[in-house]
Figure: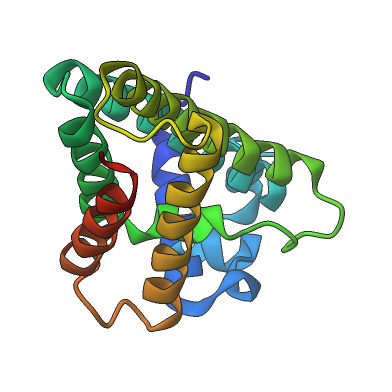
Length: 193
C-alpha cells in the first residue's frame, strides 16, 4: 500500500487523537482542526474516518512485517529471535502508542469489515514470523514438540496482546518493555526444552 506523506501525517494525527481521548474523539472535524485545514481538505486524502483507520492498520501491518523480517535476519537462533521480535514490538509501541490503539479498534465502527480485516492482517503477519521462529526451534530441538507450533504461537501471541491491553488500559502507567520482557521470558521458559 502506497501511503503519501500527507496521508501518513493524517494517520498519525488520528492515532494521537484516539490515544489522547479515545475513539469517540476521532471525528473528521477534530482531525481537520488538528491538521490545521478544513474537513473538505481531509476528504481529498481519505473518504471516511473508517478509511483512515483501515489505512493505519495496513500501514502498521507493513511496518511490522518489515521490522520482524529484519529481526529474523539478525537473530537466526530461535529463542533469541522470539525474544528480539517481542522486544522490537514493545519498543515500537512504546514510541508509537497511536498504533497500539488501532489494534484494539475492532468493534468500534459497527460492522466494519475493513477494520476487522486490517486487524486480521496484522495478526497474520505476526503469526507468520512467530510460527517460523517456533518451527525452527522445534526442528532444532530447542522448543518443545509436545504441542504444535500453532498452539505455542497462539499462547505467546495471547500473552502479548493481554500485556498490551493492560498497558493501554492502565494509561501506559508501567514500563511496557520491562514487564513485557519478563512475560516473554516466562513464556519462553515454558516452551524451551
